[in-house]
Image 1 (tube, rainbow, N blue to C red):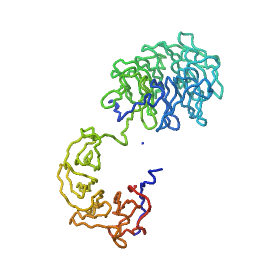
Image 2 (image 1 turned 90 degrees about the vertical axis):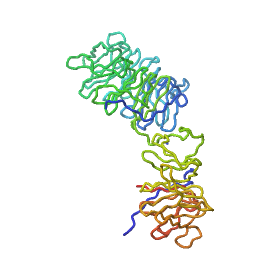
Image 3 (image 1 turned 90 degrees about the horizontal axis):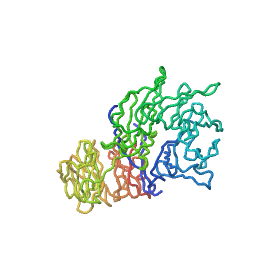
Image 4 (image 1 turned 135 degrees about the vertical axis):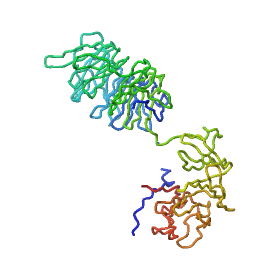
Length: 526
């Protein structure tokens, strides 16, 4: 039978030279403040087609590429700089353009030249841009504070409509075009305004709202409209042409005013409040529940200006005077804790680990072996004073540890027995072949050892052997056993592969690969 190809991933030093109705429980969170951003007074957050996170603040624009932040600001001497210092709102259009609305006008980001193109408005004044919205035909609607609504379409800017004759109509805080083509706007007054354009002109209608100023509009699956106001949620009923209570339970918000609204692609609605954290209404439910981290509401004392869900499901929460809070609602790939958290001396070294129930066994250098749960808390300890360099668990649940000039069999209740000792050389690395009851280890600078776990007989393979059983290099860095039972030995001079069945290092026709390279470890892929 022919051997199937085997892929081995090799890490070498050379490469090293060249990151629902119950509460939504977040897994981890991190705040980015003035140490990363141009200002902690953040106002808006969006994600672009490249996955970059853009964060608008009162003192410029920031871009996060997953590794680093870079900032953009306004310069009166540079016409290609950001068109204003304070970034109020942003929009990523369907053709992947990044639009930025500031307190002094609107501009687009140019990815090719890493600068900005200012889009001139037909009024020669610095205009405060309050909101941006893209229509189904690609036209960009631009809401302003005091000058109404403009539209940028096919390279031209024009006034979109004549505002309704009501106080505050030209101060546009929200924009949305419903499925019938009507434009809905809001202002600083407790009203909602609808506009319908036709060949005869533009008609408008003003709807008083019983729950305060309109923050934003959200389309529903049944072709109705949710109107989120500072003090609650209304629903527009097309049949009666009226606003009625939407019937959502906002008890968890404890009367906190609504500051911002964000609807995800799944249909969940995130609500940012003023001074009481972030809440979510899951699709198909009618109850707002808090977003919490470690049993506490997220940013419960901050004014939340914007909530953005990125493509990985992370929440980016813009908190005024705090910065932006990245919140992961999924399990992190890596958890993090330190042995110092459990009262051990600062600088304690965790020299070896092995899986144990829902946690791990950890060997603290010169201090023994401890059992940790998944949160990093010590649940048991034993082997006090042992110096452990390596530890493995076999398929039978037996633990093996080596250190100094000894190898022990260890039980998590603190019992251990010596199974090997050498008076001249220390042991450093272990690998266990559970199927054949063999434990492989090294004597530093001397040999590869094989311990038969049935007979407790030990055999040493050194560089002084002859022929096929000769070890290529005695400075072993790592030992790995693959699915076929082959033993891969990483050394200071490449990698060797030992075949126990043939007692040979010539399984693949060579005694070592990656000669003249210090190889730290090998790993078999799937």
